[in-house]
Length: 390
Image (cartoon, rainbow, N blue to C red):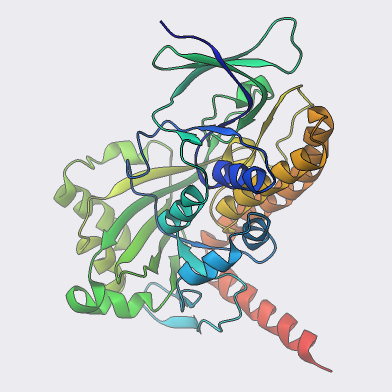
């Protein structure tokens, strides 16, 4: 028989945003409970590289008192970036300047760093939320039901549970919609030795090889592997036309999109060492917000899921977590003031980033791509040069 426990602050979701919130609360003497559906920290791989932005992710790490630890773990040289056309012609090749504007780190390493910074038992692994409801007669209190039949109550429910958040319906009816882009994700291992042509095309950091509706995107990982995404502007049902459980057949189907492309770029799919994993890219409406609902709020993808074409998702989730925690610390005895303060900053910040992400998607998959991306970086160069003129 399950008994209903009470937690003053419950964070649903142990991703980067939820863990950052927990860490910032912890360093300020407040201990939340984090509920994560995965069975343990090694339950699944955590994805590829993240560039941690100076004005968001790095700011969050400083609030979490983890910036020095981050500097010991980030991927030196990972800020390099190149833009190619489909023939493999290099249109831009940017070295890592070491200025730490957007240093790269493996997502799993970053998550481990946050997990290791929390007291043992903060994260309740294997806690899948199946229902949430407001408790009658107790404004701001909510009851959460778990898949194992257990329940608990909380005075502050934080939805850090991603795109398909179970907490979001308490504040908003919005649901993610397909953006028109699907990704096929894969990896090439030990690239320098086993896949030298593909490694040379990728370069030392990030890659954008673009041609209208199709793009080969990726990053060289610290372990020498290549993490690759083939992006395709297509109907939402396109991924259902391919049997991705049959990798050779899937490769043949996907490679049709790369007919006429440079052999090394085609090789990033043809020579992949892992299965091809399809991912539809979804997003919440730009400017998603909600009216203040007592005792509950959202952060990260639960609040503002967007496409990855501004590199903002993880950074914003971490900044959300830090800013929410700092608002709670500043208003320890007044949850509603804390949440109102946090949301007043959250909504305009996330709307601006979501707009940037939507514009980035259109630029990267424009009919004349990669022209727009090359011009954008040239404009950044001119802006930086102008700023340096005495």
